[in-house]
Length: 404
Image 1 (cartoon, rainbow, N blue to C red):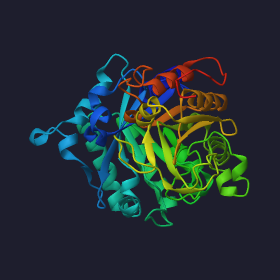
Image 2: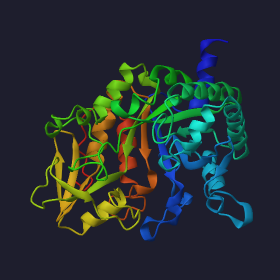
Image 3: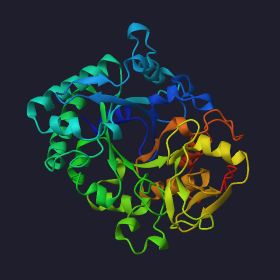
């Protein structure tokens, strides 16, 4: 088989050229959100992303696959058939790849660790995955195991995860199916969980979750959860100095992950805090705990961009560009949020392009301003990010999104 034929096959399987991959997660539970936060599959713009991931399906300890919400996911018994509607995105003009995501934070390691450490369950699991993907016409699978050997896992997971990944890849190649994996980004999280060089050989793309590096539930100070670079206030903590995009990507590449497999994770939401002292607002200031929940996501300590931009429309928020980390933050009274806007996303994307990464990934599309309610059109963050990804320029990007 000559090189041109091989390249044609790989292009058909993987999708766009390296450097142009834009992977977007869809949190299927967003169909239950109230008001302007209610997000249905029909709200997805199939032209924005090259790959869409349906989050999530479940794995039983014996290797069975199941829907986490049959009424929402499937057509049975009058269900909404959102999986069917989601997979239909691949039939649109831009024909994005559509993958099923399995796991997620709530799944922890409990069932995964039982499966991968038992040969019979692994074999059954791989067969069941293929059956599920083919039944619903998915193009592949994203494994979101948070995290091997941690969160209820076993030390053996680090090696048996590689055994599992190799078995999945061998079976999937025969079926023309993609396999991607979502991984913890920072060094202290990644070292216990992954044999990075071996994992890189077993998957098509590695979605590096370079977000949630700071959060009010485990931090006593306020800070941005997805900064490009370290900050001076973190100088006394080697762990915190590694919790940023640059350090994380450098670590993964030094440990053997090729740039061509790495996909930079970008958040479409912010992490919120309640300030311990309303006059102390700079990153590194004392935190009194999670910030107030947003009206749509309704989770303390987190706020979708669509929630934040609506709050900022109401005024009285102070927004600051934090030059040290190339990200914005905002505060009002006791409430503080570190988030991303078009400027910070463009800056990170240009850095990813400089490294020659495969592309970018977003968690998750339903927290962009998908209705355009804030006055900058539908999906302002995703549209600006796609523009930056496909641009031949590598300037920082100071496009005004009304949030600077």
